[in-house]
Length: 203
Ligand code: LUB
Image 1: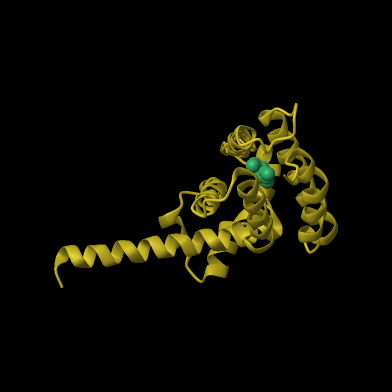
Image 2: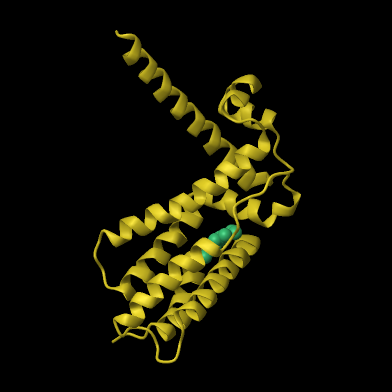
């Protein structure tokens, strides 16, 4: 094998290992929170030495930042996937939030990032600013809905985005505290039926 080929394989392995470490950190942050998780816990669960973990991340703060950044990237990836389906703006918003609900239930990275953001004042590194990405994404989508005549008369896209971000956040939080998100699909269906159907009335 050539030296270059060898290096590429090594780099691929490093990328995979880094992802394993990050996924494990996400599981533990989601279960125990930031303060309740140590680098030793992460190393033990992923089956690596502490030194090997530190090769990929400078410290626990860096892992928290990477989990939260990974979570915001996931929302962009989901939006891209939904966009590729070429739905109208109303259906795009509903699909995006359906998939977001599923991610809150099935993705440790999402659960971890949400918990880390609520603990952000106790984390010794600045995390990306919460909510602003979602506010921007939904403001743009509600603007498109408005242009397509799908947004309720008199509702501004920015206001609709604020209402949806705040209520979606609230619904997932209450569901997490009371039922570890076991009822989140039902709670989202209610929010969808009561709020989304009002701002985006069916034609
Ligand atoms: C989302 C969380 C948890 C908003 O955008 C964010 O920062 C979010 C944590 O900060 O949910 C969901 C619409």
